[in-house]
Image (tube, rainbow, N blue to C red; front, side, top):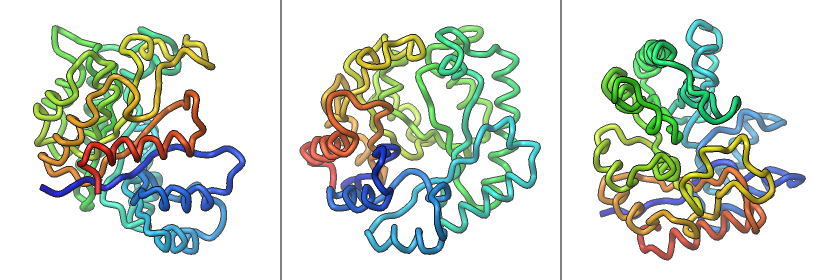
Length: 276
């Protein structure tokens, strides 16, 4: 059973030159970033070379909001070109209506009809991207588990009605906030499991009210391995299922800096024995 490699997403240090951060993260032991370098200033070829010279790889290209993308052939081609340039095999299809509450407040999760429209859009995009040789991914949040129609969760609709070539970029922290056991859910969707985001929380309920939370203290994000998730169990399950990367994520820092929190995540993942 192969061990996991460490990757990250986010952790942007304000006022720090990006490559100074990348060098620091590589020295910690990280091997890849979930994302590409397309937003960095400067020559993209030189940026990619510098990134690779640090021993780092890109894992995924983000396609932008699905509703804007699906009827914009130019944007679709740009996404494919970008993924090819950064030599990533994964394209993230994002922003379904069920997560509208992150912008509009708790309880704003679209409707059954908007969900079905999302499913139609995702099927079109999955067909296109998979046809170009990429693995389409969908990143979950908690709403896909807590919002139901006719007794069925939005995520179960997605799994049942969307082309199975779509993989779930599973965020185990949001699975926990959604009220499920991350280990059990990893087993349930093992055939659809794609990239793995490892996020941690100090408690389950408050993050659902993220828009209304105190932006300084009351948000419950915490360094990976310092919250309620069973980190050792999750990483062990990931190894069992043949996942390659454990991608550390933290939407907001708590008492540590971005760099220290990412270092904390690496050490806690390493201590489980399931990280290279």
